[in-house]
Structures are given as structure tokens and as C-alpha cells.
Image 1: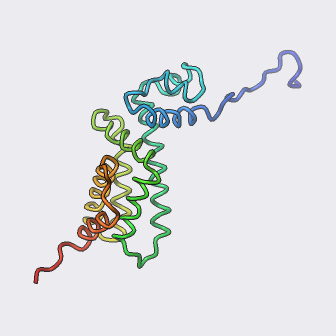
Image 2 (image 1 turned 90 degrees about the vertical axis):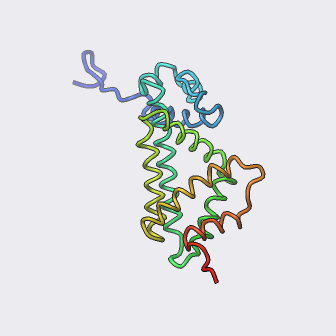
Length: 194
């Protein structure tokens, strides 16, 4: 039976197969513009250019929307971190490289950093978000531990996250040399007394 004959059935695929991904990206945009409290199904639908029913179809609760936004942000960061680590020469000055990385996050990528930390902090009150935020922490520990050791990797990950939060809020921001000094101390320990 031909497709155009009466009684023929056509299989229909989704009209907008990228809609779910667009909604997730729109949730990130809403966080960037309005913060976590600005995320509603209505605000995300408007940002994505989709009907309100589409957001509730794909994401039943606001936590579902925030979870996918945090997951997308964490995945993007982990990918960027993998590329950064792979491009770093084996003999690189790791403290200097970390300082450059932090300064890039708080200068060139400030908006994305604020969004990611808004979502990261939201995990404190929304247990559904904790798995995605833990993925970012684990990636930092792993990548920093590759260049040092597992314990120092954990120390550097905590310092890295703390510095990003502090520098994003600081006015004026500490300079790069101060950030490098902090990383150098964490990697090398205190200078010998003598």
C-alpha cells in the first residue's frame, strides 16, 4: 500500500526533536538573567520559544529543570577541563596554569561561572541536584590529582572552587599573582624555615 493511498498510515517522528535540549539551554539562560528564583516553567518556556506545556511535558518539576541545567553546565565544564588538562604540557608550572584557569573563569567566562555557581549552590537545598554538582567536584579532584596526588588534588579542587566563588564576588578582585601564590602554597606546602 502506497503512502498516499487511503488507509495508509504514516509514522510521525517528533516535530521538534531538539526541543528538550532547547528547553534545558533556556533554563540556563533564565538562571543567568534572573537567578535560580527566576526559574519557572513559564519563564523557561518563553526563553525557549516553546509552549508552556512543552516544559512541563519534558520536565515535570522545577527541580527537573534545574537538574538538567546543572547537568548540562557540569558536562560542559568537565569537557572544557579535559581539553585544558590535555593541552597542558607535562612540565607546565601547575600553580601558574591553575591561576590562569581561575582568572579565565572569573574574567572572560564570568557570566557562565555565576550561572554554574548559582546552580551548584542550589544543590544545598535540592537533593536532586547533588549528583550533577558532585560530578563537577569529582572531575576537578581527578584532573588536579593527575598532576599532583589524590590528596593534593582534593585540596586543589576545594581551593579552586572557593577561589572562584570569592573572586566572582570580590570588588576589586585579587590579582593573578596572589591567586598563583595560593596555588603554589597548596602544591608545595609552606616555605622551609631557616
